Length: 112
Length: 116
Image 1 (cartoon, rainbow over the protein chains, first blue to last red):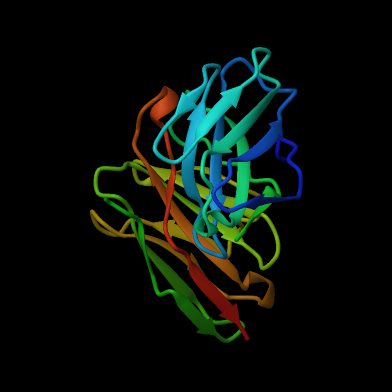
Image 2 (image 1 turned 90 degrees about the vertical axis):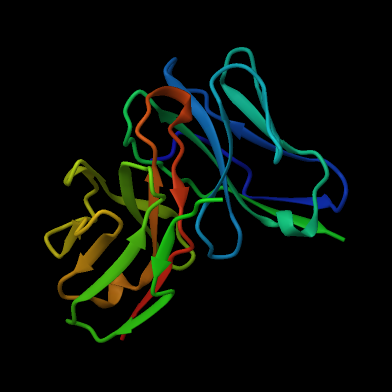
């Protein structure tokens, strides 16, 4: 089972920041936090990941609390194309083939 | 940008028939995976593959399923005798063999399998 808890759905106005929370209170020291998204029934798309420091790339920012028990994915300027299901996944990465365990994710609706 | 390619995009088959789903992983990747998603449900792991053998498999991946890397580019999933409950989207993924933070799985667009 997934080790994360996410709200089932969220709305965001177009152009505003979307802040998607995730709880992972049982995360282990060697587990990373990964975020993927799935638009309609397309394949999951990698967004960002981190261990304990905040991370930023061209798609999003990831804020991880100091105790690592929760994190927030930030889409700084949401567009209609960001409407998707967002998955927060914790995963050990000291092995090359650890499978991803998907939960139900958060369905983000970006509204014009 | 390199991507994982899956064919066909939609496969329709009769119950009891064999199907082969095909994937071309990203060229320098060494780890390969199959996942499936039944309509309206979660994405589920099926199997991972490295160095021409199965690394890990889930309970879903029973004797009706098999995987193969027949040449240097293709990675296939075979279902020997399809059942109605095999109807799902099947996603192939690949990752570069590294340890630590750079181990990212990239997914294809999927094959929709419809068993009639």
